[in-house]
Image: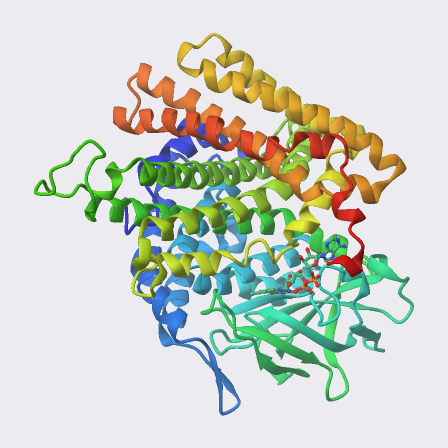
Length: 599
Ligand SMILES: Cc1cc2nc3c(=O)[nH]c(=O)nc-3n(C[C@H](O)[C@H](O)[C@H](O)COP(=O)(O)OP(=O)(O)OC[C@H]3O[C@@H](n4cnc5c(N)ncnc54)[C@H](O)[C@@H]3O)c2cc1C
């Protein structure tokens, strides 16, 4: 374990024994790579995380960015850490060699960034947003835009933002009011107010490239009228040098409960006549462009959440081994020494839950990243299509399940610490506050539930939902005759049957009465997520059993821990949301029927 960010044995188990990511070296895109190059990148990321990011995680929480003398002032350690990250080249880990990238599979690039998130999620956010904005320009921008804006972002010279939210339009993006007026020279003048823009103003990079959603004068109403624009803080000349300051100003900083090291800004565009902007992709197609990148971004949110849950778990584990309180129930002699917390059953329950949530959440996100790799680069077109469909289906789960349950893991980490966990002298309370953002941004929990039940499950007549069920069924069949996995396999089989019945019932209601069908979408997403993570836990147990039987690379205790955690998750956690099966199957109306005036 390194600085309590990750158990490196577990990471290697997940990547190589569970997900077999070495198989990607067979693809032509990754043929120069090997397990050694993957490990070298991961080791480098961990070293950067431990040495450059983790040491100031708490300092930036205590000493938030300030606005002084017309500038945003941020602790110097943030810039220093980002400079180290820039020098490693990890910001372009997944990009092509010709663009100066490392051409690593997405699963390895996400792992590297995940380790940095585990070390310091706020400082990482500047880099994470830049990578996301750069990927969007690479996917949807013109060659000229790639050269002028994306390449300096890959090199870490320019940073990026995503400017979607407006004060009156958060979840309801179709209602944004920002305007873009075409100019004779092909550029646009952008005006409007954006709120909650992370990394929206700072002096950490030469330039900030804002990706802004706005509407053209002839835009159709709603989400189909949104276009996407590049709006640089400083205009960029043809030779790449910086020109005039653009008409983008900081209206104020927002003060948050967590993620405090990342500046959160209110930005005004066009106070002096219009900020210069450049259209990315087709007019009125901006949201589709943005959503193109959402899968990666949402894997990133889930991964950040899982890593915060993970580091919280490792801190709680160490504390539970070191702190002594009380005696065994059967010990009556007060003269005997107190025992470590970890010997109390209730503490073991909380540690097991954290292990199940954090390791399950991390496995889920890494699995999703492998789907993303297969979708883009698998040689067989059917694999590309199926992996893409499965990824689309699972994205609301990948984003939301860790955001809910790894946050719960952070709460349990506080509980294991008792009163000390509630103080700022121990880091677990910060992990909780930082993680509390994840169910809110990148589409709230409520919106993700609606996306899953209202759209994803029925995509292509439910083809990918069926495919998921087939994949789960295949694991169940492989495990059916294995004595050590029998109980877990049965529990998963029952849960899958319940999920199938609920899904069929709700799809019928949805055709007649979508409001009623979607009223419990949040609960449906919990059941769905638990079944998926239950499946991933069973696959981990399968891999662990193989490791035990074939003398795998790790200690017996490690593999046995995986078997125990699988059983814990399937016995204790999986049944919890499914206990409300009847509420879902009957499309219960209790929440809808409560009249407003009765609240
Ligand atoms: C720290 C932080 C960083 C952020 N960073 C960025 C950023 O970099 N760029 C950016 O553009 N935005 C950013 N955001 C904004 C974020 O994406 C929004 O806060 C989020 O989308 C929710 O919008 P809202 O806050 O307006 O809440 P609202 O949309 O008002 O939602 C309030 C509640 O109502 C529910 N709700 C809303 N609509 C529906 C519906 N149709 N059905 C059911 N329930 C509904 C929501 O689920 C939520 O629980 C950030 C936010 C925070 C807090």
